[in-house]
Figure 1 (spheres, one colour):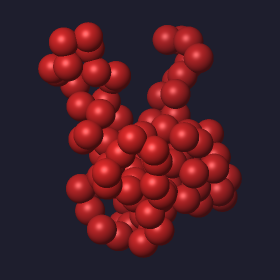
Figure 2: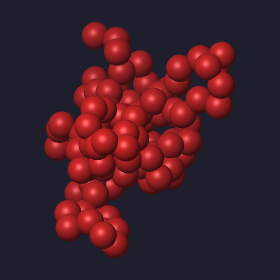
Figure 3: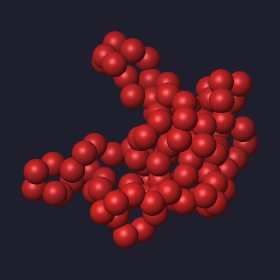
Figure 4: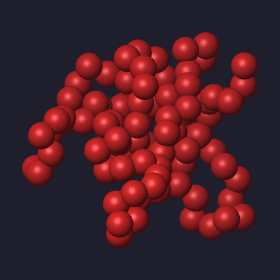
Length: 101
């Protein structure tokens, strides 16, 4: 996967609203796969992103799932701008090594 990059997944906004990725900085939503519904930030228009799969415990290894950036947009109540739809590429391509050169 030569066109892959890592997605930024930030912690939820703290009560004061500062630090981490803000709610408005998360401009894409993962659809399908192990990260379904996860909001992330993307800084590119095309390609496959490596989205960190949420871990159930700190002992689990860090894994990434591949999500393809699409032209599709998804609207949600209470948000003026639509989210970019990221579609899971499936098990065959989901184990991307996004940190590899």
